[in-house]
Image 1 (cartoon, one colour):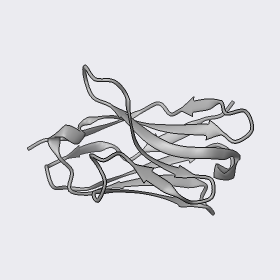
Image 2 (spheres, helix red, strand yellow):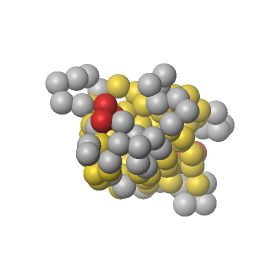
Image 3 (cartoon, one colour):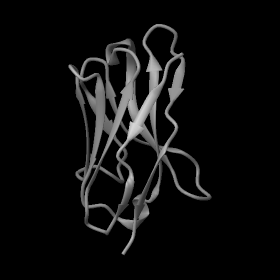
Image 4 (cartoon, one colour):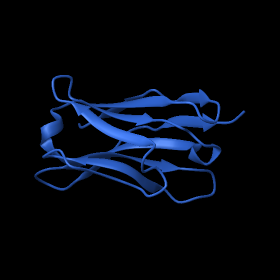
Length: 117
C-alpha cells in the first residue's frame, strides 16, 4: 500500500517560515507528480505546488515567490519551503502523488499549518 508520510506543520507568526516534508514509502520516481494541496475551513481543497517527474514545478498564483517545492532524490523526499507566511495560508496541507503507471492519486494524512499572531 502506498503511503505518503508528511511532517513539518505547526504554528508560526505572520512573516515566518515553515518547511513541510513528504516521504513516500517507495521511490519518488514512480510518481508522475508529487505535490501539496491545502484545505482551509469551509473552503475547497486547492493545489499549492507540484513537482513533476523530470524536475519541473508549478505553483498556485497565491504562493508564487513565497513557497518553493523541491526534492531530495537520495532521501526520496519532497519538501515545501514556505516563507513570508500569511494568515490566509492557514490550512491543512496534504501531500499528493500521482502514480506514473496507473495515474492513481494518493494522499497523505494532512498536516496543520497555522499562521497567526
